[in-house]
Length: 316
Image (cartoon, rainbow, N blue to C red):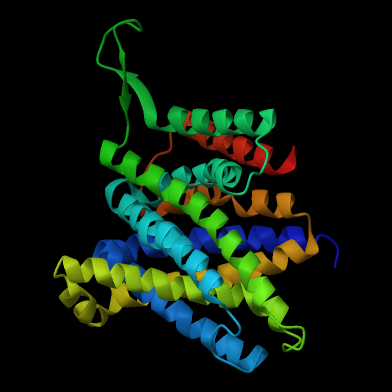
């Protein structure tokens, strides 16, 4: 089928959009950490079943110590820290602005790749980063407080706490991606030549399972330190909140990851990444319809500019 990869990439963007909307509701009802533990635990179960049918074992076969270390570290950075910030940003400023800050993931990944892997940072990458940051700034800044244009001061249109959480989410996602790349490199070396035929194809899913397990454990430890595990135990009693948490898992870590891996097999990785990153645009209409919010022209310009910055990272 022509343009299958591009269509799959757009479908993934829709899945991420649905995931963000479901996570917004679930986080408000159950709490950010509770939702993350539920979704990562369920993702582990879903992937275990998938691995059992494809490679004959419901766990990450052949993964060595270095693979576990780097994938575990990527989980703590990308999931425990990054997703903690992301889901809490939903509580502070909503999923629409929370997803906008996720456009920072490509710049963060580029810088992390430069520092950790020695990957080149060309001039276009710095320009793309500047464009992305400019788009976010346009979306969250406005002038107010004076009668004339000179008297008006720049102010944030969202809480500073939300901005800090958004920054943490985007940076955590980007750095976690680079750490997972290192871990998957070690995992690939661990797979013997006589491994099941499907093992190489399913290795990203096995790696995702490892990250989900460590990420969930990280959240459980934090909740335990806060003596807040009772909220996790009581979560299933809130049927609506728990249902949304399950939908968050199904559309995100399970379907979203699976179809994103499939998309890059059928089209250029840069095109796929750009199309899959359209969530901040796609989420505007349903979010505004659900929560009866109006979108300012300035915000549309900012989101569009941020997406242009993301596209520059992958397509130039």
